[in-house]
Image (cartoon, rainbow, N blue to C red; front, top):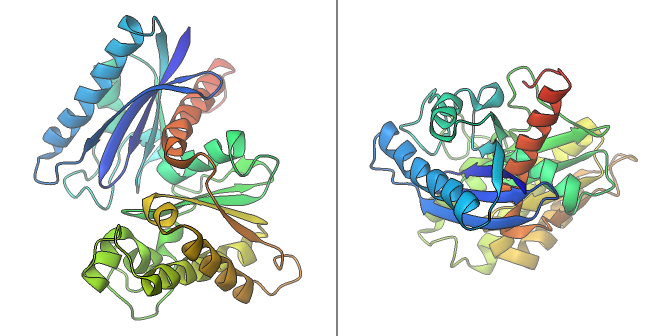
Length: 299
């Protein structure tokens, strides 16, 4: 059995797993990012779970890993040749693809984590059958992936969809990107903790509503500009806040989407839950492998 080695890199956790060609995760391992480590130390953490999954594939599952797919917090360069996750400060222009190729001896294809989630949710999740939608993550960071006419948008540098840096509070909090009032600076897990003094795992009703309304406000601008009819949201903050968050986000989205073509836009939870990021990373690997096989550009 051929499998994809899927890797998800977030600001707080990294994960590696084995995915079948039909999108089933058969093994997963996670590790907390050690923010006190060096760049090499953080990659060492990732390398350990990657090597463990390769060993599990061959020894426990009698499976053959054929490709590596990566979804990483950004910014990134094409194919994750280099990654600079804003919440992993020691990784700036870190040569992730080359390092993973050295460890795995397999072809490696990478993309932004939220773009990977868009592939997953369009393939097996809440966006099945939709050709114009955005998938986004509200967690340690806030990111997005946008599908237009059935095609995932890349942009000039591969970073299309960075909805976390839409301004939702003019002159608001300073963001890790350097701007003020970004959605990520107001609605991410670290932002919520800084604003409230409470962990996002113990939110008040008011903070769940505020976070939902800010997300609705931010994505409304994207939907109005790009004629989208669906927004799929995953990530530990959004999914942890549940119905209170999603109801507030929908109210805000509807309030700000008043054009005839966006009045019906919906916001909904990611259907794949905590499996979505790794399935998305696996989908990035499959897409890269198929493009490479037919001689198409893999950037």
